[in-house]
Image (cartoon, rainbow, N blue to C red; front, side):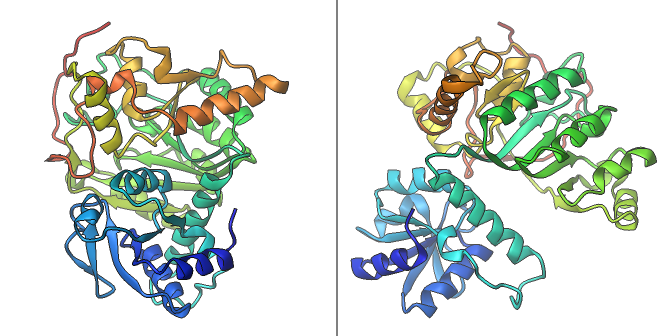
Length: 402
């Protein structure tokens, strides 16, 4: 792995336009580093169509797929945490000269940052950790892993991207099965930045405390994040499981539907539980289940543009690339194709077998061009069509079973 000094020297020697991928706080920090080193940055690029064609730090922000319209060649410094997505897009767009910005951020002092306290350090630490993990060819690093603990939800949203609206008789996942799945997964990986505990609505599974307790004790876990919709107050006796410096609760703010949001805020602040309120104004239209018969090339394109293909999910001991594929499989809404997941119950976890399993998981995460299940998905590009969030329905949506 190259050092910061080596990267900066190499960028200078190439004498090419320099572009920072990602118009955010980390990109702003990398811009300062470049300027201190005498490296002129031409512009930013970003894969969000909403950010494109604006100004950031008084520089143009170009939509990444359109970079070739302006530059024949350039050096790209990646600032986004989702580095694999960025690398895939940048190289596919025709820019092979890229560098992981996280390497340039090591040992940086942001204590005097003009931005709100805590967030710069949080964003930079995440960038460093994820970029190091991506570049590490020995250890197996996960930026995040979703742990499905329930199909039950206190809302019934027509367009839920995790497909909760299709469950006719939603159930809590078996706790012992979840714990066994976590054990198998942790035997394979070396480091996980975020274990994301999801549903459904996580607090509808009364045994969520058992799962959180297991994850808090896991040395490979950097943080445990619970996602809730602001409709349920955890029992007072269970709040202690959230009062841990590794635990963060993210509350989706669905306005009048998140009836307990204000009360949750008060409780969490009083009990010093870390939380973040996520304002939700739109969803991507990606919840329909139907076969498209696109063929391999069509599904490759869908997979390439998908913003969720690197959101690995653990369900029933199986490792999936995204929550959609995990839940579509749970629903029997797609044919069972073993190539679409890694069944950790069937893989060896000792001796040379463990090395082979790690290699299989790494290849699954890095080398797939598409999955067969992609043919049943409408696609989830960042620039895709949007729908009004949390539109409620009374009856489960229908689908074809296999």
